[in-house]
Each structure stands twice: as C-alpha cells, then as structure tokens.
Length: 170
Image 1 (cartoon, rainbow, N blue to C red):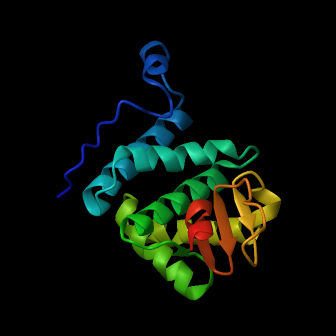
Image 2: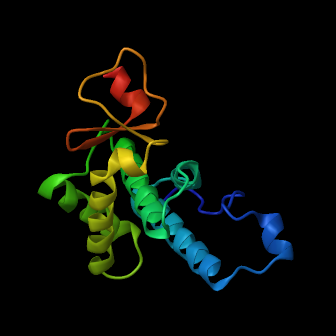
C-alpha cells in the first residue's frame, strides 16, 4: 500500500480550464489514461504525483510527436523514474531484455491486460530506434561522456536510457 497521496494539485490540463471548458472525447480519454497511470504508480511503485507530472511534462517539451509517440515517451520516462526509485541509474530499453523489462513494469502501470503493456513496449522500442530523428529536444545519443553535457534530459547509450544528470555523475 502506498504512503503517498495520488491527489496532486497539478493536472496537465489545468483545474481552471476544466472549470470552464469540457474536454473533447480525445482529451477525456487522455485524462483518464493519466489518472489510471497516476494511481498505479502510487500504489505499485510508491511514486508520488510529482514523478508522473515530471514524465508528462518532459513529453510536452518535444514538439511534433504523434499521440502514440508522446505516450511512448511519457511511459519510458516513467519507467526510468520507477527504476531510479528502486536504486538504478539506468533503464534497459532496447533489445529483448529491454523489451521484457519495459513490459514487466508497464504491466503494473497500465490499466487492462498485458497486451497493452506489450504494445506500448513495442512503441517505445520504435520511438527510441528513431531517437535523434524524432526526439532531438529530449534525447541525446552518446557513446562516451561528452566534454559538455548535452542539453537533453535523457541520454540513450547502447541499450540503456539514462537521466543526463545520473550518467554524468557515474
């Protein structure tokens, strides 16, 4: 049982906005998805709403993503935060082991059956496979620590995704 509240004051669509404007069907579905992931992250991984908000916010920094790509970026960022909370500085995201890890964590975070976790893990693999072409604002690809830190908050090195600050600290 989680010790954290899943009732943050922050929501990506804004409380004031909802007070005066009803969501479209697509927005309502997106909001329901966010709320389900928020609850699961708190219950299963003891992550606070600030973790889910951080992952969601990072997704908004990258313009031009499709809805599926934005969801994949949100989820892989959240899986990275789950791993950090469990003491890891990196998250295996590519290859068979990476996909298995993503599916395992996503099965706990996503509503419904494991098929959704498998589909989202596949979408994450495709998005990260196209990394620099699709995510230049949030994802850097480096083979060795650079002389200057990359401006992106996430770094893909080999099969692993690192938060930039943790990679540079290693």
